[in-house]
Image (cartoon, rainbow, N blue to C red; front, side, top):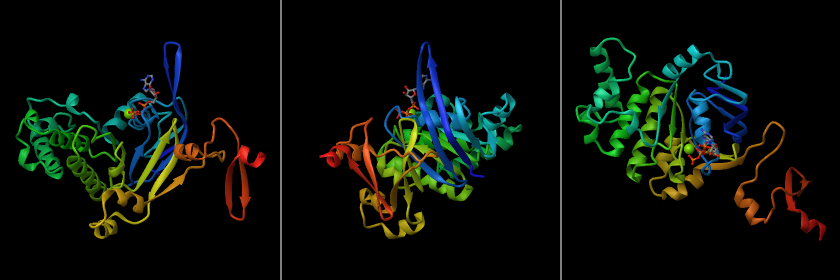
Length: 300
Ligand SMILES: Nc1ncnc2c1ncn2[C@@H]1O[C@H](COP(=O)(O)OP(=O)(O)OP(=O)(O)O)[C@@H](O)[C@H]1O
Ligand SMILES: [Mg+2]
């Protein structure tokens, strides 16, 4: 079984008398040890999905399995254990979960589920070392840069050795260089800990660093970019080319067919071909390909 399996996942938010369908039958499978990113317009349902994966909210309909657990049937006690042992969260702005006048190390120790202070202190030091902050562990949080604070947040998310790291725009508030450092750190954790990572990013450049990019549109998976070559061989090969070219070369875009055989065309195709939605297109089989044509052309 995969680490994450979503099938026809639906999430409806009810606020007074309006309903928002944030996820509209989303299908997604994430394998154990995968490092993937979600992209998509504002309001497309990315954070909603992360919240469901993190057990912070529950699905309205459909199937959701994480780490062999049926999230639609999980008990209250099961959920507490799930949030403690299975997932770690990193947000865009983590400051609200951390205490400015405590040191980096004290902040990491705080949420730890170990009994002895001594053990917690050692474990916190080890985690800060892993995120590259060994030299700053006794600095107060307020004395650290935004990127360093973000790395403290990653150390906190790792404190209980989760299987999955969920990150919602973790680089949204830091500069390019720091964003690179954070994604490189994710890659390292992914490789050394076999950590499954699901992150949301708006940054196309960063999405070149992951195994797979899933594009969410209107609460459904519409297309995926799959890495063609391994990250290691890419690193060796690409020193010369620019990062913009990089994601073009390393990832192939695929549209996602859902269970009923429906597919969502990318918005650019719709505009370029002046296709109206809702509307009709003609689909013809030509040998082993399907050709879509604007309706008016065939009628003319
Ligand atoms: N708690 C809530 N109550 C009501 N509606 C909500 C709630 N959370 C999200 N929504 C709605 O659900 C839809 C999806 O929101 P979501 O936050 O998942 O989008 P997103 O893809 O993360 O967007 P962004 O890129 O702006 O963060 C939006 O229409 C949003 O307004
Ligand atoms: Mg969001």
